[in-house]
Image 1 (tube, rainbow, N blue to C red):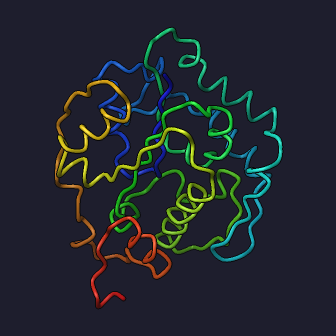
Image 2 (tube, rainbow, N blue to C red; image 1 turned 90 degrees about the horizontal axis):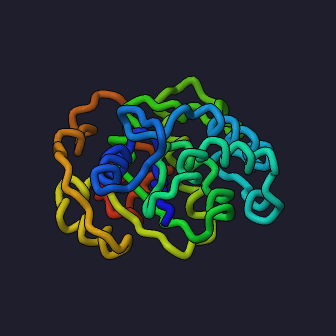
Image 3 (spheres, rainbow, N blue to C red; image 1 turned 60 degrees about the horizontal axis):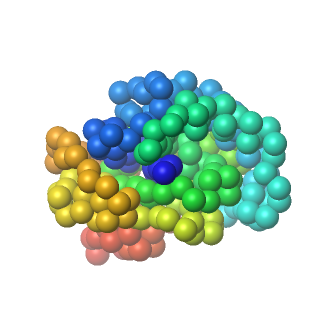
Amino acid sequence: MLITIIGRGHSGTRAMSHTLSASGVYMGAQLNGSGDLIPPGDMYEACRVMGKYLVHKGGLEWDFSKVLNDPIDPEFEGLIRNYLSSVLNSDAERKGWKIPETTLVYPWIVRMFPDAYYIHWVRDPRDSIIGAHLTDNLADFGVPYDFTDDLRLRRAISWKYQREIVKATPVPKRVIHVRFEDFVLKQQETLRRLEQFLGFPLETIPVSRDPIGRWKTDEGRHIFDFLLQDMDELGYEVPAEVR
């Protein structure tokens, strides 16, 4: 079985990667401290290849029709298979990978691996955009958008874009949605859900509550109007005064 984690950088996906590794899932030949499969160069270049098929309609709207309907670029497929070579060539019964940039190419990943198990991982965007990540500037990965010098706004746009590309992609056969906050605050309950989905037992790893709600003491801007609907859909409460 093949497993991957779909989630924006700085959303706590390392917790899921570490859980899978501790539970006997082979996550690749070389991992960094965040549980990412490295080296990442081929994945980054694959993002730029797919980016050529994206159309920015202006503002916070993108046309994903080409990546949903056109043939997958052979260069992209070659880069992904090379990046995942240690995983795909492994004879492990359970194997997978994690790197946040997988989310940027989600439509073509689903088409390449329709039978994989997809763990969709989300975190309150107010916490997610406080910290820096490589995908803060989408243009670095070939995604067209209205660039801004406002760092927090750039991160919020990145969060929104990655939410939109996931929503635009046809739902794969095997998918589960997990909130980082639920994994931390209700770990055993969340692990039971994941075990039922994956079909094998998962180990408990140490987790800290400290990353949850950091936005409450953050002095920078961490909320944007265009995130409110998504926050509602994901179950993140927004104070009335913000609305």
